Length: 305
Image 1 (tube, rainbow, N blue to C red):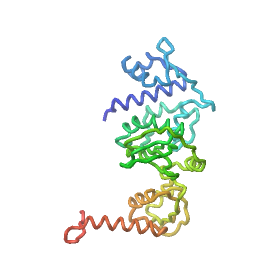
Image 2: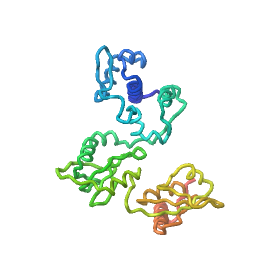
Image 3: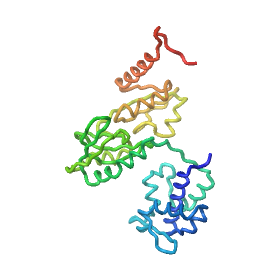
Image 4: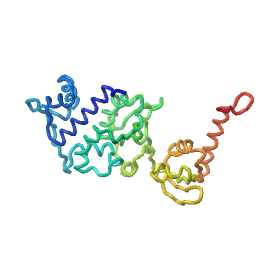
């Protein structure tokens, strides 16, 4: 399948940024030859980078700001940190950046992520500038979320599994608001003082489901699927308690039941809640409700073959 125009443009922009940070400048004519594109297309690409790139004459373009950050790292390292690249490539040394273009061209390595929400382009365009401003200036904000008007103190914007969330406090309770569910965002004149405990909690937890009030969950996982949980943490603050015949017992800390239940539904019937009892009962009630809906008028469960 041919690549879309948008994906080819995105690849060119990444390539241009890397060249800028590795070599300091890019040449317009060289870009035309390298990508086999017209001068008009090159102008369009460079215009997309205009907030950080400037023309220095003779078809040469360079970064407006120094390619080196105060810590001595180029912007490519900053971008990698922003995108949490260390999760995939822990060692991002000079050799990594030198080999990056070859790796992309040879296509021997492929990183797949979840598709973003359908509304992400609209949501980011509509809310990003206001959200960033309100976080930076500590402005109280009024939003309409799921049809309800709320006053919030915004702290951080986070992307988890390609879903954007705004982490904010409402009535002193830390919550996460999905951007796709925010239909109105207005910055108020009043400001707030960020709470140290909230800042520390957000710094410690890289998850939209974050709260000072968490609960422990103990789970038994059968050995036919346990390797999925042992090779990486699928549960929040996952901890191995016991390996035994037939499976493993894990413990985790959750801030919301939705951190746990969807995962359990996915792995049924090979996973079991041991504690707490209320969460186990919630799982059973949900399954019973589903089965009741699937029953026919004669109270017979509909079977799917």
